[in-house]
Length: 193
Length: 148
Image (cartoon, rainbow over all chains, first blue to last red; front, side, top):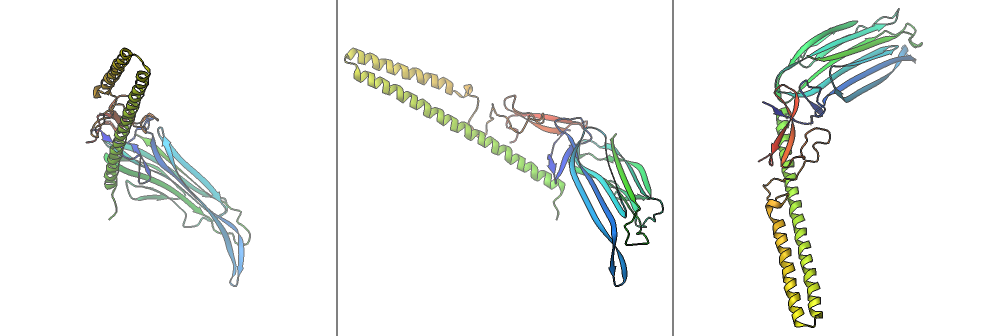
């Protein structure tokens, strides 16, 4: 039996019609998340205990509502001379009269320039709300998951994120900004099956 | 206890119910106001006609002419009343004034502009978005006030 549309927004999320991205009357919408964090080594500061490295940080957190007219992907990348974090993701609310499947392909990559020592806290992680668990790897993580999203009369939410974080150690000379680079990239592909 | 999505959904449904009823009430109030204005316009028109004949009758010197003018005046007013009654028949109206009735010329202004819920073209109907049985987006058109 058909079900009435809720929304158009529920708890700040647009409500989409199952996996139907072809309707102009009811566009299929999702929230796109792109977060980039950059830590830049700028030099040092002298203390009684010796020189201490100095860094500056910038973060951007973008959350936008996008319309999909079919399969779509999200990607981002960034580079710094000390620490780089790239986090991408999407989430949507939907209503469906029957279950449907989506396939999420994730691809994360981290690298450093030659001669750099990668910090042990570096990691790449994929998480989605269906499994509730994290898939991790380093310096690359790629794969795909197919999820069956259940029918739902009221809006149900699905989300997935991919984070890639890489840091390199400070140079021996703290007071000279690092000449190395820490690179991170992440891509999520969403396919309606 | 946090509000669940389901509770929020039904809460929003109740608000939509209230909103649609409020729209219906406003339309009916508008209809009543328009009819009152039409009644006032009609009364003013009849009054003006009577005034013109009164002046003409006063100016007439011949009794026969006065009588003819009175007869003509009465006939003009009768004709006007008959036309009014025919036009006033609810079956000839585009709207009804009963609060529980349907606005047969009504449309939902928020619908149809973007191709989404497209009420308004047919009398007494309104359209809502639905998820169809095959998971595709569709619409359902309802007749009458839709919510009882």
